[in-house]
Length: 600
Image (cartoon, rainbow, N blue to C red; front, side):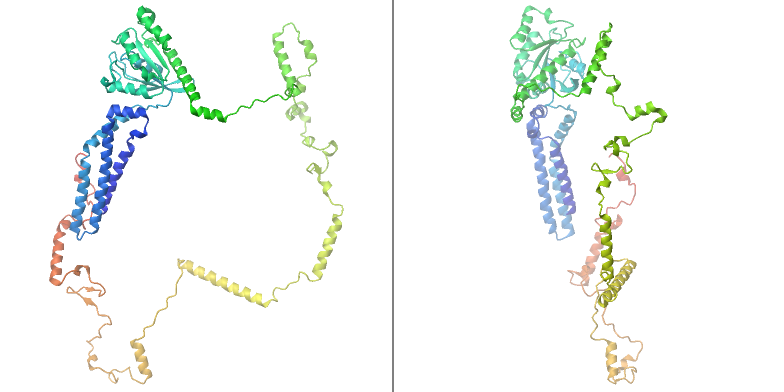
């Protein structure tokens, strides 16, 4: 029963861990849910987790049913067969989920290789046709090391990099290339880009290659831009013309230049030129995209419902003047003089003709504005300096150097002396003497006999308690001892003899006694014991209170011997393997070869 429960609990915990560790599609961000659907097929993923949940419940039901049967097992063999059947059914249920385990293991390994994307942070999303310079741009502005090759679809998954601008952290996502065809015909690589464009709130950077080195014409690139335009809704957008070191917009034909003019004027889209090969315009594009996204996020937050609630709680108080009187701020005179001195010093530095000499006459010297410190006084006096702390006391000048300079609440302590205090003291002494003479304090404690006996009794109790505590400590026990009253036997041989002697019967001599028995004369014959010991056929003494286990359910001695032989025959295998019983799992050898050799 214990093995069945242990196996069931082990399977239950492992399956529960798998179900909890895998993300639930309904609880995660829509971007991750759609990405999961694109990469792993959402229906297959849900079905695999659902079958594992059913498998867990089936194992629990099997264990519960077989534990109930094991409680009523009538023999060890039946219990062993039930245990074997229970473990076999659990393993069979688990083996049927092999394909689901393989699929979920592949999903787990692929999920561990996916980049960590935060869909709610400040993000720059790069998209466009394959081989137009998307990976080169993210390598230029971040530390992401994305593979760059001169052929299409080098980037097959989403890559994430981070950059710093305006003391903020920005997330940059490089998406795989997108081709201009219907949504149903797009493959898994392209659908990753579509999922990122649809769900991540970001500034979208659509990169174009007007040199057509990517293998796609300008018309195809404009067609793709307009086909995925619904994904740009309510998002800042910048169209970037890359590889201007090969060809610029001004070098294009008038028809193509008109397309870009319409993009600027009609669709109100920013168009930026750069070259990742020469790093021309790369940093400017990053700064422009970050500023555009930051202003868009601030505008979006101010229009949200939460901002209106917060603005409703705020109140800016603007004080209104009560009259037309001008109340200038109070500035101390020392501060004004210091400011004036600084202004004059600054003007002196610029004045070469000495025009500021007249204004300096009305000003006090610089040293008068600075308070003298004790250190300054010490430097002036030199050896004649004596530290005087009493000069700063908050007392009148005539009282600072009094003999008792201790004060309380600004007053001298001598002001609190009572002029009649000596007369009051003499009166208290005379009253105390009268009480002593009248016997007010005379109280003889020893004269009270009752209190004396109480004290003696208390002293004895304390001594007894101390003695008991010492004995208890010596016995190393603190348990209370309960007195046990032993009941005397009503009948005994010694009491019978004593009663007969009192009645005049001679019990000392066996020959002359009234109750003499000739059979007792023989010294070889002994009196039988009071309690007869029961001995079996083999001579073993056993208790007479309970039937031994090896005799329960057996009619006679022949059946007992036969059962004993069968038991020894069943234990022959255990004896050969040197095992004490079925539960003996001891490995005699410290390093058994069958456990340590071969592949693990």
